[in-house]
Length: 343
Image (cartoon, rainbow, N blue to C red):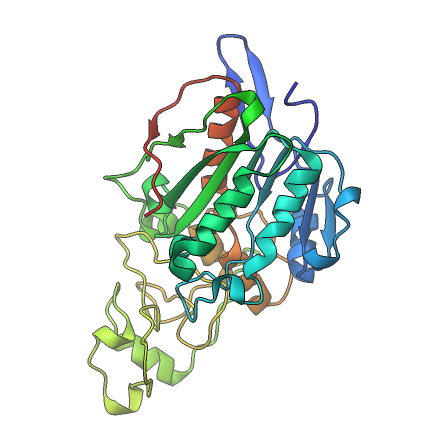
């Protein structure tokens, strides 16, 4: 019965029960975002999905349509370790409650919520406790929560991206989600393999190269792969006049034999991610490769907007791993698992 309705999920997933030859799958129904070009990208790639493009505060939840599952990533701006962490006191901190409202309205069999790793420590951990309390008590009978900080590189993602993901299964189902076991603990996928095993065609969509200034090119020549500008002795005319905190990603070049550092969606000069063998910033198609988007996934918008969309997304491959583990849980199919932890 739990598959009788559709799902507003971020990633299609499917499994098959070999014992009964039964197929379990997830189908998109609706999606929501307030950023116009993000909505256009979603609609372009998922043509049969209803996309609602408006501020979540103005969303008519009752009109969305029945679902069995719900996935959302509530804004992480105020919980991120980059910049000032404001928690609930920031502009975006309380927006997770709109997801709670959706769960209360539709009582899905399960939900998945994603946020930055810094969520657990925001406001001395008080914000996180409130979020878990509200999600656990949502719906008609509440949800059994499994909370884990996933290290994406441990699952074959060519990127060191650490995110807290909360999986809630309706208590009425009497099932407990287990964190899928890492598959690449000792064999991370490197960016060199990601780029060179199947080279990106020069005419690929979203593969526009940035014209680098002579100063940036000269600066990058001093910086070794895997290092940032603060780890390098530069001539005075190439140094940056920065006071206070020095972000590690400033003019940081990828290391060819390691996963990428975290791909971000915004930031000024020096935060674009830089190639390991060429003196330039990454293209959006390269960023999308690192995030595991397929090459035929087209992003709509100008270059900086596309960068934002890629950096704020959850890796499709990581999403698929988690969604399929949830389906296996609901279908009583065993799979390798590990202990949940978020510290």
